[in-house]
Image 1 (cartoon, rainbow, N blue to C red):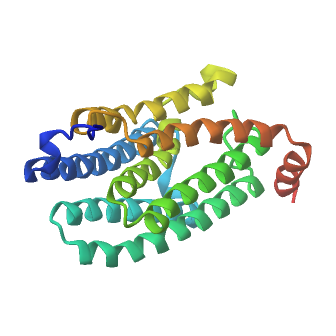
Image 2 (cartoon, one colour):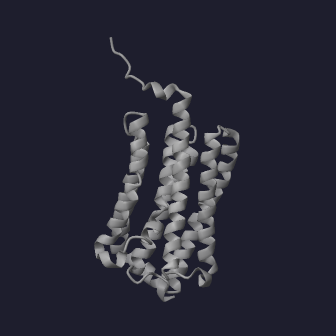
Image 3 (cartoon, rainbow, N blue to C red):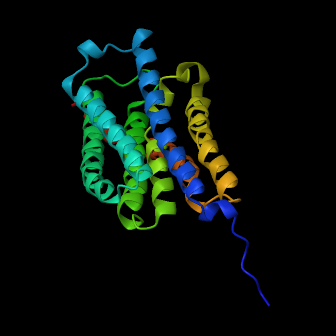
Length: 247
């Protein structure tokens, strides 16, 4: 007679559920602090000048901080089992995610037009980086926020993946990209993927296996970088980027 796979005793306990929610709450705060640190040290080292940055740069940054703040609150509401408030705040999270996508595309376009692209990126690469990363973020976030919102295991893991996906600019301000040449973006992505070691370890400790949702983020990051390279080499796309820069 076939028997079902054993379920770890902790999975049915309130202790397990509390520790699980605590993990995602800690990850939310940790990622937010990391992003603030990465951008802060970049400015303190004189590589950026927030006081003279255009308004659309500040708008994009404020939207990102707002979205990460909402994500932190959402994990706290989940921890407190305030599900009704969690769902209502989720609507604001969706609005902010859409605004972030629009602001990011606008910021990239303006950077091209005003020749503010970092010198170690080509115009085509910079535009592809923005477009592809935004697409990956929106796709993963939409899946978590809408399609899988009723499946808690998938929802919370994909939401965390969406946050890790948008840490790419933060890693870009810590990795010495100009010194690494063509390998630089892949080194940056490797560090970004390494963050998934935390949810992977959490899965192994609580579930005894890696949940498939935890693997979505690393796969998306690799696919994004491959798509960025392909778009950069695509002549019509490169011409579009050059056209914006020359306008």
